[in-house]
Image (cartoon, rainbow, N blue to C red; front, side, top):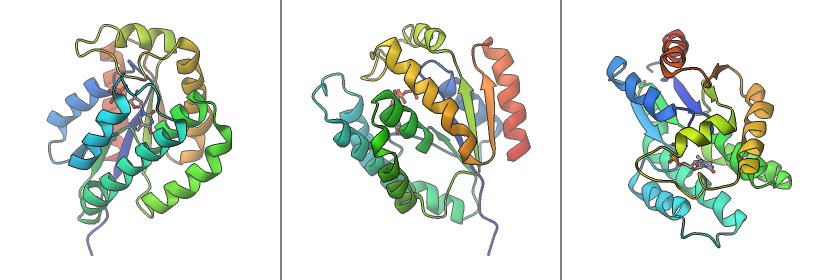
Length: 205
Ligand code: TYD
């Protein structure tokens, strides 16, 4: 059987520049399968709308967590597992570390972590990411950038700075558990970050 593809995940808080860098990678590596979370499938994009709508103000944290996981299960089954199995490389804009950072740390639900780990194993099976790239942005810097976005702010963008600081904390605490990873200082100017992203990706793809 052919070799399994490589699974690369980009992570980082609001305004860390993930979208911009992934867009640039698309011209360098057009053969890669690109996806995003939540979303990346028809069902997942419906779930995304529910999750990100500013109107979803009364969403229980458990519902929120389960919806992110449901979208991930669909994405794994429909896109990521088949691509990796057929030897294609996959780049995902966010994955499991986002759930730890946002739902466990941002939402302050430390007690959900064992459950999250169990369900993640159930969903991801053997297709665990090979490498994580964390675009590490200081929350104050990231929020300022995200505020300038033309498409407006989602339900997470509008959270208080304290929420984003907890998310940042969660990222830093857990990135080390995930095997191979790069932490890139995303407070730097875009071009400097891009050089580091390019180098890191070239070393794994
Ligand atoms: P998106 O507009 O894609 O944000 P960004 O450009 O910052 O990646 O919205 C995704 C939002 O969903 C983002 O605010 C982080 C949040 N999120 C979670 O809270 N938990 C998760 O597991 C995932 C994948 C995303």
